[in-house]
Image 1 (cartoon, each protein chain N blue to C red):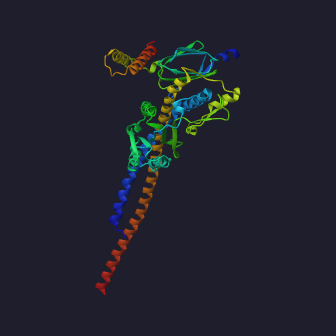
Image 2 (tube, rainbow over the protein chains, first blue to last red):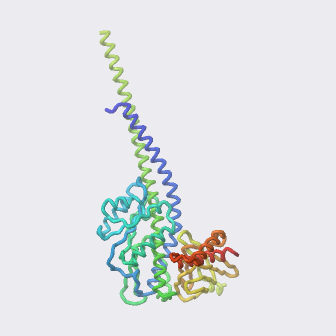
Length: 311
Length: 137
């Protein structure tokens, strides 16, 4: 049985751990609120970006454009958004696991890391990290998303990468964060039953994240789609708009990832704090029992000694 | 009134940070890659690329001006959606900074440095000029 001193020492060490986790939880809560409101403010933009792109592609009919055509030879770039710090439960691991299970082989994959934890654990597994923008995750700006997107688009245009994916954690609410793996480029346009302007329907992996809705009302109202004009022509317009679309998705993903990170850290630290409290309580009981035991033992010894002298 | 409501269309301006404007207008002016355009209701559906320039919103006799820097606009018959990467109201513009940016961009354009990115400097100059024009009033 542990001695009184051991128990006391353990209890005080757990107490100081509890203080740390409590403080970290408070910090994460404050950061979460900030990150959440930022993520929520950026949502309308990505949602409209998505519905505009969807409506454009549907109206424009069949456009031939490198951003829409799959099947180049080249590596597959994956933007992996994780945190720079740990102690956030399974947050970083979930994203990494998603990348590992993505079905893309290690040799084919180029990692564009945002967040040190993800970079480190993928590097350890032998993945090639092409770029590291981990500083960005502390305070993501739209400009950062533009830079990351710009570099990737350049690599895409040069034929170095043939597909671009994004792995991040989407933020549903404080307790539910969903690791998400989605394809950014090439955009997947699915042709409907008939060829022609209104036969094309869009399938984008990001659809449930931003919830496309705007097209249907109008389609229902008019019964058919008015063809869309582009100024300059469709190809140039897509040239200009798709990079913005990508940037907005990356920016949205960065903001959601920050919110998820802090949410994950908050709940991890919350359960750590309550675990610590539980342990402290148990150790308190154990300490009292040990103290009682030692008093009893001392008394027994004294009485036995007295009896021996008297006897 | 019924006729009046036919004149208006819904104008939405979004930036990545916020919903910049959401309301009705009967006429909007902006600068696209093809030149300046003005939009009334029942415009032919069009998508244009925006260039840095002032965006003027007319609603009856009210007029509002904003600086819009990069993005695109989707024009439908009864609605106009502007997706701008940067948009500012006149009161949000820092005149001194814009003036400095103008001088810097002009210097870069005039300079003989072959490495200078002229296209970027030109965009920067247009941005600065837009800001000055919008805020200068």
